[in-house]
Amino acid sequence: EAFTTIHQPPSEAARQAARHRLVFDEFLDLQLGLLRRRQRQRAQAMADLPMAPMAGTSDLVTAFLALLPFQLTSAQERVLQQVRKDLQVTAPMGRLVQGDVGSGKTVVAIIALLEVIAAGGQGALMAPTEVLAAQHYHKLCTWMVQLHVPVALLTGSTPERQRQAVLRDLETGAVKLVVGTHALLEEPVTFFRLGLVVIDEQHRFGVHQRSRLLNKGEAPHLLTMTATPIPRTLALSIHGDLEVSQIDELPPGRQPVTTTILTPGEREQAYGAIRTVASHGERAYVILPLVDESDKLKLRSAVQEHQRLARTVFPNLNVVLLHGRLTSGSKQDVLEAFVSGKAQVLVSTTVVEVGMDVPDATVMVIEHAERFGLAQLHQLRGRIGRGQAPSRCFLVSESQQAVARQRLEVLTRSRDGFEIAEMDLRFRGPGQVLGTRQSGLPDLALASLTSDGTVLEKARDAAKLLLKEDPQLRTVPQLRARLDAQNKRLASASRLN
Image (cartoon, rainbow, N blue to C red; front, side, top):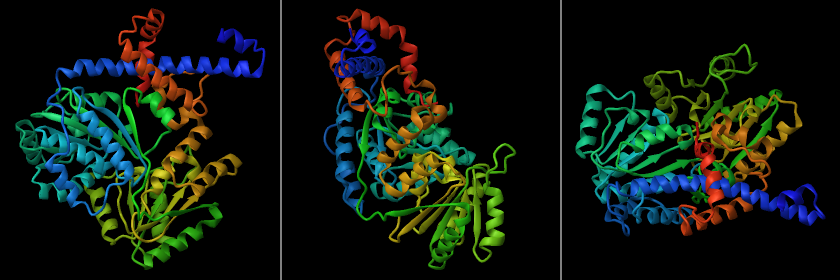
């Protein structure tokens, strides 16, 4: 009936009602497929859960909270309650925590890890880069030493003797918490009792990498985090087999960042701001999209710009260069110089997008800003404004197109990562927002992730209710047959790579 009506609608109201029904059906199929996948995973894992359901707050977590110099925000408390509820059932947790830069996701993850450790399990925290893994490790050490929780770091740069000691301690259970990179996925890594896997910036890992780490334990809990918010409609479409939580509140005291769009001829405004903050002992980032010059793309590169800035623009400042091709030792030397203040300007690619926490960095200049997505620009901007001083972000755009200017103006008006992600989705569509990671996103004939979010939420609720009352979908054989036929496509909808 809906198909007939939408092609020959007797009225506009009838057309809208028919479209609503067809959109609902599309989303229902999608959500049922994803939720059935999650249902099967949980059923297979329940018998293998490495520890009993947890109840209440452990003494270890109480001691950790006493060490914090701040109170948790209401958003952190809300998400923490959701995580605790997951840990109190007999099936492994699968949850994605989205939160803006600086919203306090890591603290929530640490509390979850400590609950698991207090219950006799081990925890693993995996980060996409050695820089971020090392930062997590050093921050954790300051707390874990006081809590008497053994913690280790395992990356590709870990010396062999130290690496063997870490592997041995993980297998015997002497190490309760390990922080690492892709090195945690390697074959020699085995755990005594892996209870919780936390994956930071999870969009940088493929589903197969995620599975490899999970397979190192007997059905461990999974908590994934991202500081690159994507709209909830998109999250429910590609992460539908995970529950989605949002930390949508920043701790008090975060300094707002003033964002300004510049043309190439106005760069001196940004350079003047860098000289001013450097004279006050503060620091600045200059972000470039490429490491080296490209014949195909007429863009400034980090190597080229570092030489120019150091020689002609800031001859009296120490300007250092960071990019992904440097050795681990070189990266560490550059970061130490910048963090300590020996270097005042860091020229970098987007390798600083996550993990950099330098409170004295108060200026950022992003070259070719039109080449970046809004969410990525917001993520980069989050590297400043982390201290007590006001901060400024300059977006240098070479594009003459009005739509490019309109996109960038969103950042001058908003500091809300979720609002910015929604606008990014409207401007570029889900395919471009996800980039190459969109390979598993299902095709939708009528439904729109930008305008049908309310219908998607209703369809997800209906799918949950249907599976609760009829887990095998025996009462709707046609629907079950259709979902089985589409299983490969639907299963791939949650892939990130």
